[in-house]
Amino acid sequence: MAKPFHLAMFTSFNMPAWRGPWAGEAADDWWTGDYHISLIKQMERAGFDFIMFEDSTYVGEHYGGSTEVSLKHPLGVPKMDPFPLLPILARETKHIGLIATGSSTFYPPYILARVMATMDHLTGGRVGWNVVTSSEDIAAQNYGIDKLLDHDERYDMADEFVEVVKALWDSWEPDAIVQDRENGVWGDHTKVHTIDHVGTYFKVRGPLNFPAGPQGHPVICQAGGSEKGRALAAKHANAIVATNPRVEYLTEYRADIRARAEAYGRDPDEVKVLFQVSPVLAETDEAAKELYEQRFELRDPLQAERTLAGISGTTEIDFSQFDLDEPFPQDLTTNGHQSILDDWMRRNKGKTLRQAISERTQFGPPLYGTNATVADQLEAIADATGGDGFLFMFPTTRRYIDEVCSGLAPELRRRGLIREDYPHATFKENLLAF
Image (cartoon, rainbow, N blue to C red; front, side, top):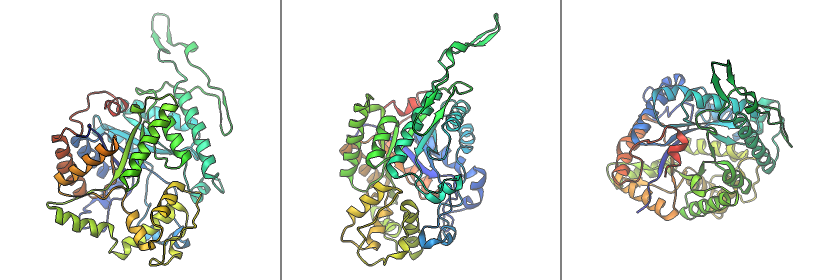
């Protein structure tokens, strides 16, 4: 039997599904945060550990050289900044972790350290930072940068960035606040220190102008798949995201991350690797299979176009130039998400592009069936890989969220596979509890 594992959700602060029959009012009330409030309450009741908000700051125009498809579907837009949403969600819940994305390419490290420490205080120790390097030149141009650094150098920069942020969080010693009313001394100046960092990419004096929050270092999340990405994740992250439909890849990835973490002097059990999944649930296995085929075999031409446009944004390659029924091209390069493109080409050699994009819509192993069937599948994957948990890529409708939180999660809980409660005060303590 698999050991207990963690559940999390991967989403954006953007509009939920708006064309489907179960979109409801979500396409209208998401602007205020109301949709995400209802979502996260369900997740906490179901025993999820955290929600992770990815983010980007551009309007895609890689597909066809225009923003037309991005705005038509919509794809990646509209998308709002998730950082201000976290304290709102924290006020509506008590335990669940809240992760927002901050780019090491676009943020100054002092601002990122200050924002995260502020929110750690505001939420009572329930926030995390998803470290990304960003991969789109058109996003960089919104910050006065004509072209991003090369892929590997962006990760070198990110490594230095995280080190600076950690040093700023540590710039106040734990007992720097003395509050000696008798002698009129609130803080001990000998225990607040400059960091005087001078590196390749950053020069930061410090200290932070207030102490770090309840977690000290908020939870750090990362999703590196390339050589440089794996190194960054293993060195710094508490939660790591792995995306691949092949269980053997996920097994290898987790083992590699744990070995790297140990080489950095870390306890590998304090590095949680979660696998992305998008299970399809129904009352019978047969009905779930039909829904799965509808969702992932791209029978809807609009879905095929939307999927290709999303891949174009991720890789900065215009996939509208290729015939869907011709062999998948094998000579593509990118300065964007290199590991995603390399693995996708390797797995689809000899297939058509149409076949390749059908597989690309699956953010993990194929999972479909009744609650019991999908619970069996998740348990088998966790048992085979030693996995620490699963990061759900929800189709963003209230119906699907309820299917998972009111159907699948209770089945997993009955089997002792997910948490019964949140015994600790902070997100990091609960994440590292098992």
